[in-house]
Image 1 (cartoon, rainbow, N blue to C red):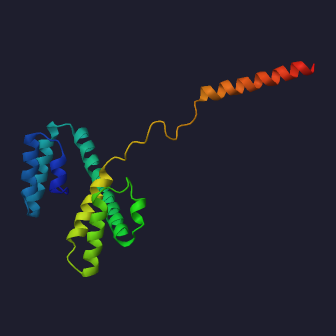
Image 2 (image 1 turned 180 degrees about the horizontal axis):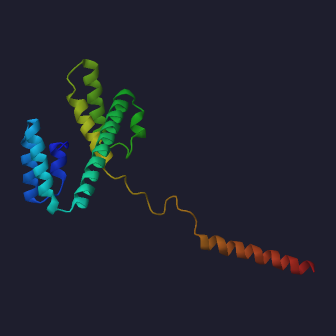
Amino acid sequence: MKLSDAQVKRLTLDDDLRAAIDRARAVKTLVARRRAERTLAGDMRGYDLVEINAQLENVDGSSDENVRQFHLAEEWRAKLIADPAALAEFPGGADDELPRLIDAARRERDTGKPPGAARSLFRHVSDRLKEPPPAADEHEGEAPDAALEDVEDDEDDEDDDNSDAERS
C-alpha cells in the first residue's frame, strides 16, 4: 500500500491480484482503507507470498540503486561544467557529443539562461553511466604465462645442479 505506482507496476503479478491491489489503493478514507486492506490480505492467501515478498525486496533495492545512480550523474554533471579537466576522469572517456554539451551548459550558466543544456548534459551523463564499461583488451595487462615461468625456473635449477656437479 505504501509503494509508488511505478513500483507496483514493476511487480509481476496476476491480473486478478493487480486489480485487487488497485481497488484497495483507490480507497482513501481510513476505515474503508482498513477494510480494503483486510480484503486484499484475504485475496492474497491464494498466492505465493514468498515470491511476492522477494519481488518487493527487489523493488526496494532497485529504488536505492536508482537514487545512487541519479546522485552520481548529478555529481558528474557539476564536475564537468565546473572543471575542464574533469572530462579526462569521466568513466568511459569522452565521446563526440559530451564536449559539445559541456560547452553549451557552461555558456548557459555564464549567460544566465534556463538550464536546458545542463539538463541535456545530465541525461547524456546518466545514460553513459548506466552503460557497462568497455571491455578491456583480453591480452592487455595480463600476467605472463605461469608455465613459461616454470620452464625458466627449471632451466635455472638445472644450471645450478650442473655447476654443483662440476665442483665435485
